[in-house]
Image 1 (cartoon, rainbow, N blue to C red):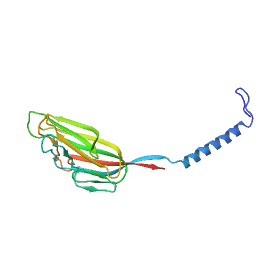
Image 2: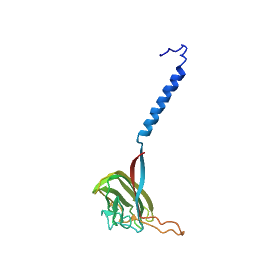
Image 3: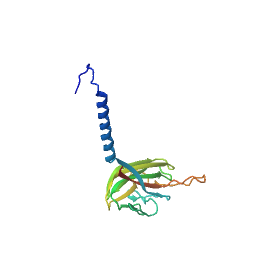
Image 4: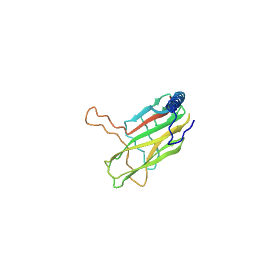
Length: 198
């Protein structure tokens, strides 16, 4: 029977409380064992690097960015010209690393624009860099995240704008110290977000 505050609880209240707690914890334990817990894991799919300088042939000319030799994995294909074609549907994160640089004297600053495209349509932010020093270098990182279907194509392109000097591009340098990794003019890392139930 229920009892009011201030009253002496019945003698069997401890026993009933223990019984209720036992049944409650048993139900919670069974619910946790029978439920699926969703875990999101990020899995490395592909890494590409280009170790050659990449420069547009002139002003206002869109230029594809290469990420090194062709690679073919289960999820996608990365061509030598930088074209990436997805072969497996899923959620992917694309990290692009660029080493903007400029060589040669000029009184004008270099205006460099970058964009990523999915199926020929711009995706994410347009990145703008202005280099007014003839010996300047600037690392840039861009991230694009989304769901890609089979057959979707991702490309990267950049160009020198005619408002600036006809100089500048993606550059690499060789370190003097042996064992120090050479920086890529352009690099790309693709990971897949995998949903798992445990």
